[in-house]
Amino acid sequence: MIAMALSCQPDLLVADEPTTALDVTIQAQILELMLELQDRIGMAIQFISHNLGVISELADEIIVMYAGRIVERAPAARLFALPLHPYTQGLIKTLPSITGRERTLPVIPGGMPNLAQVTRGCRFADRCPRAVAECLDAVPPLVELEPGHDVACIRASV
Ligand code: SF4
Image (cartoon, rainbow, N blue to C red; front, side, top):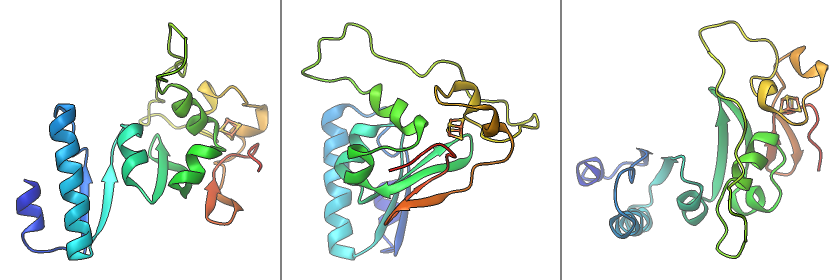
């Protein structure tokens, strides 16, 4: 499938979970191939994934989405060094560490909102450890808090 997509030398490749269900070795080979072809053809890759480990290896810029909305956007290194949205912070905390001694990985409590129902304000409010009443007043706008780093949270700051 990847070979078919690349055969016409696109300017942009949209890769939606391209390595899901592959074992780690094949996954690494596919990612290496995509990066090599990206260099050769000069195309951009929009890589959609739940795997933060893969994303950290691959991405120049990361956009984090929650319940259909962008909640944070930043250069990859900056996002991992200083995540500003509580959802991004929660995601990064759930990553296992090879040096840590924790027996239980942290989780983000609760579940995704039902988007078929009308929701008010921030869609992450039910699960957010920093939520206050004002979070339900309106959808938090995506605001640039430092150059190239946008966050949709009324309580976020650098
Ligand atoms: S706007 Fe409020 S509920 Fe939403 S992420 Fe920020 S602090 Fe949490």
